[in-house]
Image 1 (cartoon, rainbow, N blue to C red):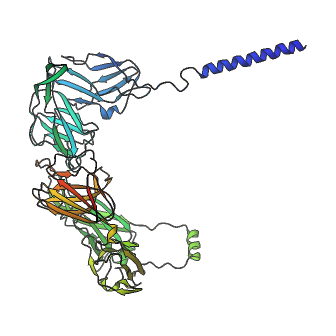
Image 2: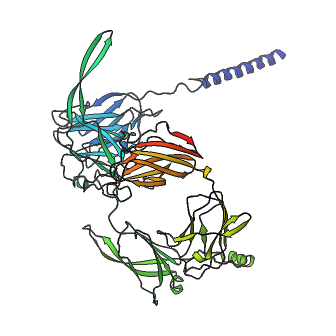
Image 3: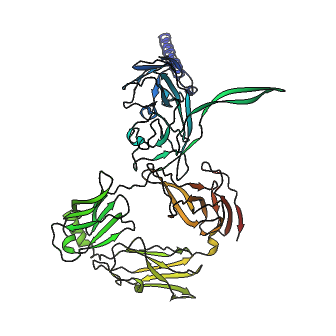
Length: 616
């Protein structure tokens, strides 16, 4: 009996051991750490028909690979040149890709199918590389090419994924009406190369083609263009190589060009006038926004309410593109729904501005509050006074070179100067000091307090309650702010030696914070600006410690701002030069820096800082 139990126990032990061995072998199948990562890209093993075929008359192309592949953003990356009205369909079939033509191919034409880096292996996503398939519907493969770079005209930074169009029809209006003769696209460095061209003179235009119709839409899409036609050429180049010792050999090869085309892209300033938006975000406020600044002959008439006198207070932006109407008449603004007839200028189908009548309904409803919650709130809270809101742009510390802005949330009815007090601390007492109140040139509800501040002095800004009222009879709450002016040692100074000035130049010192608009346009946080028309020394003082950059706008039309170009008028954007170094400002230090506008530097990576610093 004991022998039987022992035998059974041995069998159980052997069984468990066998299971452990099997599980261990399964678990260690392959590499313990997952094995080396596959970094080998897929390889093309066959093409049907073969690339660089002539007399091509097929409806499709098959490209075979040595492994399973995938397509990454192929709809965005794949292009065919010359382009077709109906883009070819690219299909994935396990280890091969099929390209099916949806449009008729041109006779006697060389086509280039560019996949960029859209073809990757199926496992690790290793890209094949920039794969290109070429064929000709005639007996000859065209081999000419041209290349260059596209940069943003204002920032000099590379423009990525911009289309570059070539036109054999060189009329200025062609890019707006026809698809190009050939096309290419910029890579991550802004570089483009368009190959397999026939010999001809080409108009060259780059477009950030948002809707992918292969045409340029003025004011809606960014554009770059060359001032002259371009004719691609091929030429022989010789190069001397050393083989070792005293052996020298001269080698010849073919070069294609031009290979240094430089295109500056911009978004045209809008000229089409129309109303962008009308809104009633507050019960008393109507807002109307136009597409561009300028004369718009705006007029408004109430349709369903009879009023005596002017029922609104206008607040118009300096350019006239934003119009705020503050409704003064309570019988008007208390109504939830208002109907108006608007009259203004609008660009018509002929491109001319003509009067336009429009009827609009503007609604405002107060936020609904649960009745029980409203009663609880009414019982629990004391009555809240609806004050005229007033803010002052001052904190505990004030810069020695800036004023203070006073801003109200509604238009005020009187001169506020007599109601504002500024006190300076002398010994232990605050005594009145001189200052000036100036209405802001942009916002009618904003005022600027100007004062020649004393460094390290202490001040108190005081406005008593109920001394200022708005057009609705609301009064201000009390404002009382104490602050101290920063010492001169807090600031740094930049002494700039500006060279190579020809014509008017706008020199801007800005913070490199890389903010952009919704359309991707760079926003420059300009700290200081000076306009000059000759070389010389400039001083930027009262600078906070931090990193800064410098740029110079060559202001051709002398209007004090950077201007983009106009394609149909053949006008390029104004040139902007950038200092290649980033400037580091330190407290209580003077920085000397030379900025030569004739420098060959146009943009790119920052160089190491080589400023001369000296303590004050």
